[in-house]
Image (cartoon, rainbow, N blue to C red; front, side):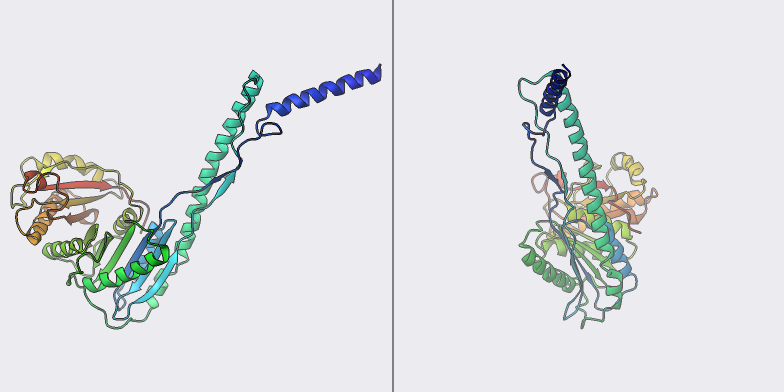
Length: 388
């Protein structure tokens, strides 16, 4: 009797074990999906900075902080000292995004599953979704840590500060653009031309003279930092030259530009992310005029509050209609954008938070002569990170 009872208990236990095995998704008899590899999908990008042939105070430290603030996975960084024999001071590629592996998705029970089996599957599926979410957070944390460590280890400040002069400095913006383009071409050849529009050139120069050849900049974003405070006419002419040379976007800033401001511009170019926009709407100007039109204050005043937020920056873009010469339209579009910037400055917005760009008669929104093209737009962007 005792032996029969023992055998009966053993048989019941075996049946229960078999039932539970069938209830556990992903186990024998119910295999789940294969393990899941989690990583970030990032597009390659390139940042090329050109520094003067002779050392300039503050440039090395500024570049170090800007690169640290804008570093991203899949980025090639090259810093070149301008000269008749341009010299590469820093050349490095950031690490690829981290990869985390999580278990595969549990298999759903079959059509004849019991309520208990379906409940067990629901619990397993919820746990799996939690593992995936935790894995994604780990990918982000590990990628950010690796990218930050890479940027810190470049030693940009020491390398740029201690580098010897590289021959006679070309001395003007055209020469520095040529050095930058040469570096970009080399990077693209090594990378198989995979940067797309995520190419940023930053040039430090003491001379805005010279015009790069048409098409030379081939869609790169160009940021120029001068060692002096340029006039509006000089900025407008330099921007016009850069845009005619094929720059997708061009900004010319004086020594008052902050590292945080420059970092925002670099980050936007590397990521090509569409910034969160607060657009002023159509602030339209009279023909051949940069005088603020009636009613402009009612359009621009609502932007004052977001512009006073910490880290906010306004990109003010001016445009012109097609009558008139190319250079005249560039200058007129810049003057219109400057008038809007003056409106903000008069109400306490610092100049360092305002980036003025003249587009001439480009980016038409209506037939060329239309008054709709005599406009200024304002886009407010948030800072991508801290850059002291």
